Length: 299
Image 1 (tube, rainbow, N blue to C red):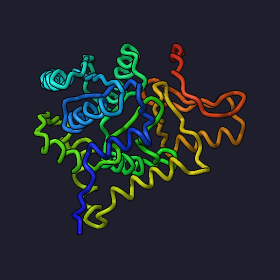
Image 2: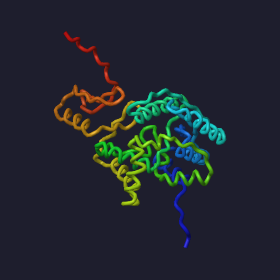
Image 3: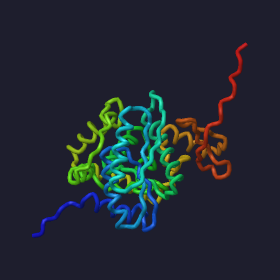
Image 4: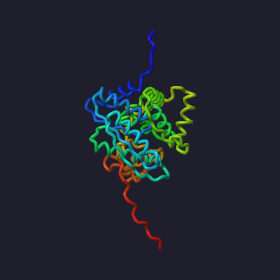
């Protein structure tokens, strides 16, 4: 009997690129490259597949200005790009520490990648999310009270954003790094237990896998099913084309305003944004919040 082997990361990514990401011959792809293991594995795979499938590839790194080591990590990413013949560029930011750091860093990174993609004339932006990332994100959103639309997380493609690695497990990524002896950096913030995602990754998901070994696959299948549900609404996108996550209280405010026809309703969102209802269709829309007026003086 022939011995069967699980598909390699190259096979998984190739299939996802063609069947779910819409990458065809002549497509132009920018890869978000941090120097970490996930993105360095995807860089190596995409460099191989770009020649086979006929798409062009460049890479871009974002230094948030939070760790001195980040510049060195991006230097390593650039060296690997040079070895593979892939053009590399970077953006250096200056984020402050403080509350909601991960969310602020994510928003700033996505904005920088969008700008870099436009400068380079790229049609698509690839990130290195894998199936374990999807499972973690779904659990995080479930814990925060997200509804069905918010649980349709990290699909293979959403607008210009593609995730060619989303059908692969973290173990597939690690196996590829080991097999091809690829160097990569470790971000210590990924081990910081003050971040809820770190605790979900290191505590909750391993416990769920003990109880149900296929839980990651089940959670990803749930995300796919919710995204494809015939009765599901179109995703609400922010100004970067990213699906917006509303918590339960925000969803209830929107639904109540729509049922009452309150066209002037406003829901405050993080980072100086607000959600309002279109005055004609009563569909939710995103905008920058208007500056607060002067406070009345006390007499």
